[in-house]
Image (cartoon, rainbow, N blue to C red; front, side, top):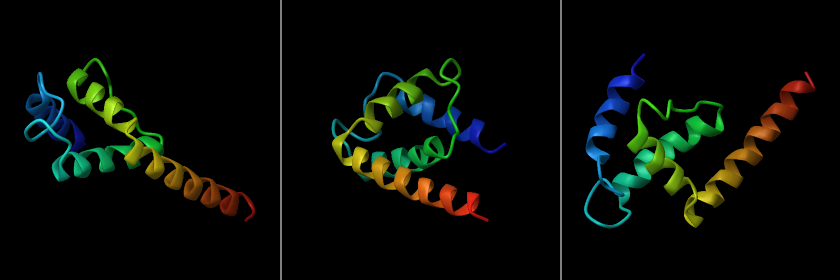
Length: 88
């Protein structure tokens, strides 16, 4: 419900850009990528045709080495939670 206006805003900000501020990966990028990474790892995905710049931006930055360690940590925790829930 709340995501479309936020995604629309981010899409507009990213048109033709690789980063939100300047020409380097900053804390602004970390904040946005981290939120969407958690959503992605929880099973949520963006509609690429609706938000092409945001989708490309996220795909690019999900591949960053710094983000890959987060992906591994979150995936591990989600697996533990899933195993724990299946034992109940």
